[in-house]
Amino acid sequence: MIEGLSHITFIVKDLDRMENMLTKVFGAKKIYDSGAGTFSISRERFFDIGGLWIATMEGEPLPEQTYNHVAFKISDAEYDDYLDRINALGLKVRTGRSRVEGEGRSIYFYDYDNHLLELHSGTLEERLARYAK
Image 1 (cartoon, rainbow, N blue to C red):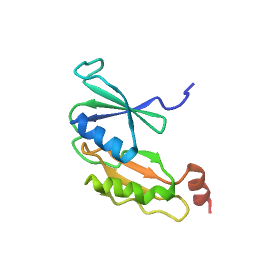
Image 2: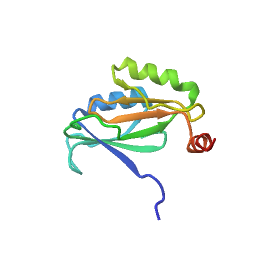
Image 3: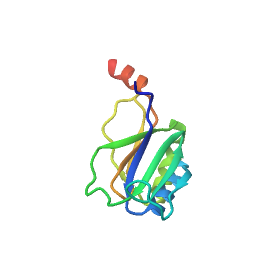
Image 4: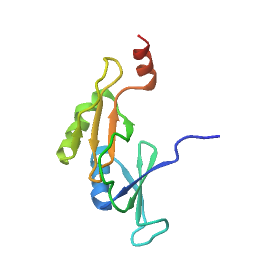
């Protein structure tokens, strides 16, 4: 039986640059750094973001940007603050998909290695209720 999400891993070219983005945008706390050691496929760092284990591993970035993404939950009141954090780092903000009122707001942005991340203020229940109208 699946108990929940274990972790999310991002392959990144520059561990320091990704750490800076994770701490500045998400308020991530670094909980592990392999240093020069390699216990998996490459050097790695682990972070805690809102109780989620996020792993970063050194490697080649994604060759292109796609809509595949990971969405993190934020409150609607924090939307503008998060957008400011993303813009301050010069990250590419992607125009979101069209939305109907009541399903929450989203900020889609690419990290330095072409991963698409989303900050979303709604819930599944809100979205389903809105779609049922």
